[in-house]
Amino acid sequence: MFRSDGLPVWADRHDITADVAAHDHDFLEIALVTQGRALHVAVDGDHPVRPGSAVVIPPNQWHAYRECEDLVVFDCFVAPELVHSTLPFLDAELPLMAGLHASTLPLPQRVQLGSGELSAAIAELYSMSDTTAGPRSRVQIIGHLLIYLDLLNHSWAAEDSMERRRRAKLHPAVSSAVKVMEDDPGRSWTLAELGALTSMERTYLVRLFQRDLGVSPIAYLNQLREQAAARLLVQTDQSVARIGAQLGWGDAGYFARRFKAAYGLTPSAYRRRALKGQDWDHSPTGHESTGR
Image 1: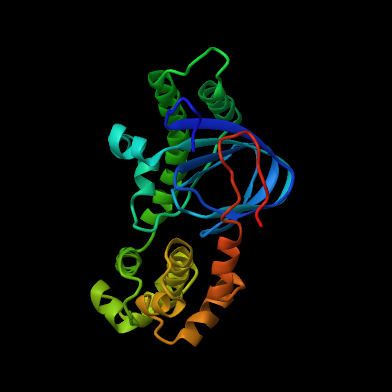
Image 2: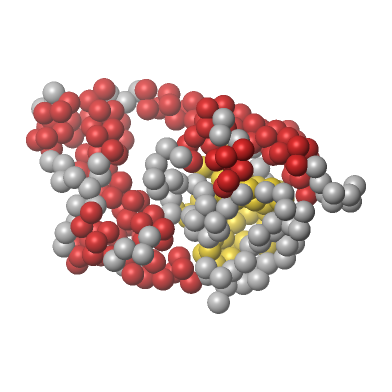
């Protein structure tokens, strides 16, 4: 997977001139856009990326690029055992990394760096990829990785604080209802149950959700289920029917209609699209090949 020196970290710059099919890896990938624009596609949707956009992609999480325009991505690849065994303190020190492990089905973490942070990040990436000075030192490489992660975490934390402030503005009843649904999206929650749990009359709870989140409680629950279904379709080999059932949609036809309304594809077609490019090798070798 990594270079012949056996170190569990590698960085490499890629010029991407065409769309990149959906693919995944068994290592952590940090993709930093240094030039151009594109849509980065993953289970959390299609996101425009531009210089300074960084995406931290968990192992075994598919992603793709579309509508690429003069795109240059500087990738950093990290073996999972380095994070879990050698650097177990990262979750405690860097909330960005903890966010990757907050769920059994983690979403990519997205960061937007300013120009100064982008320059500093590129310097660390070049240090990780430089082999001109001879064999790379494990200590030096991990040191550059830690500085890079700290740069990303600093910008991520600033963005996350804005999200926390937004969440803090939610009515307590909305926050409570959101938490229980996020903890158990497969449960057949009803407005009556959510009202009882939050000590709120259900019609008023609906109005609070509409005011704070722009959707009703049940619509929010459906969004959670759709996102969880998308992750399970790609990350597991469970049948479509089983995925729907465990997320509270026992009727496979209804599940398919709900999913298609959200993603524009049936669950089976979504899975095929995600797996179509699984043999695309975005490996740390300095070149790419297109998916089949």
